[in-house]
Image 1: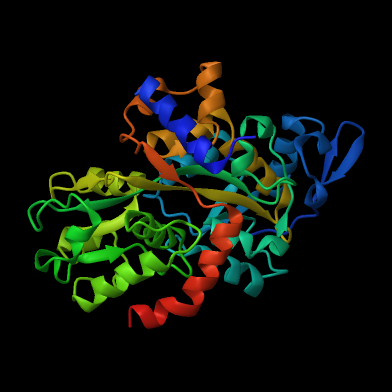
Image 2 (image 1 turned 90 degrees about the horizontal axis):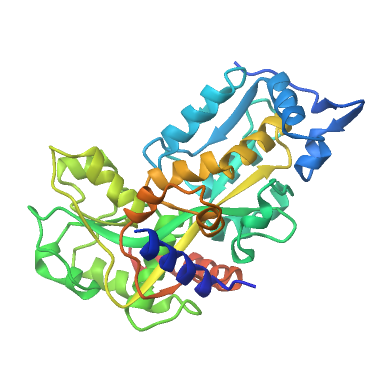
Length: 376
């Protein structure tokens, strides 16, 4: 079995080597039988991919939520699905919402045609929300490392990366280690992407600060302590960073996933200089997770979306956004990965940690109890 640590080591080694809505019945024809899409746990329940495609086309809609188009190439992913399946209208809700807000929307809209069909979640929120998910294993399930998937298919890691610091070299000195950010040159300039009790990227920022301060993912307290110091120094800016806040100079230093920081630089080319650094020492990696809502109003479309995301096409689209796809190792072995894109990824740290679900759950509990007071 691949452990979280050996998973990232393997991916790092690979990188070095390559360097108006409508209701639906939820029932679809498959051969001479009918399939209740809402209870299908794999493609075999439909018979084959064309049968699932037909069922999803009959539903005609897919409701997604909290998928920013500039996040990990999601714009291209959404457009590619729409081009492949023009009969299915994608309804995009709350693109800037957090993982926690996805679950809140599902609870609020339960039973309505506007409820989310699928989720994209940080691990901490996924772990606390499994009662909202329907188990589903995609056709490429065997290619996904065990460390990235819940055994019954309730949620599955899809794309990920390393927590990095992006910065504007025209506004601040280049930081070479985490402690640099406590200095006077960074006063009122350092932001994280969201609230760590709700957003996966912000949660990871505290995790990275923990391991960079000699702590371990067994206890996020050193990371919380770092942000308490950053706040006391007047350096912590409580603004959710976006390309607009970077362009305006409001957030010239940003803790975020490496692929998102790289994306900021690409989007702001010609407007702002933007550099990205993964600090030496222990790196912090993480993956976002896909899940199907058990109350999905379009259950076949929800499952077709999963099949697309974990196909070679979908996985290479994450890679084009600078993220590391879950099937990278298997696709490299099969020769179906885009080797040029894989080789262009930022250099991975030699030492990397990924929290287990138990460690993530403990960290989420600790943050829920202490974060607000720590940075008030």
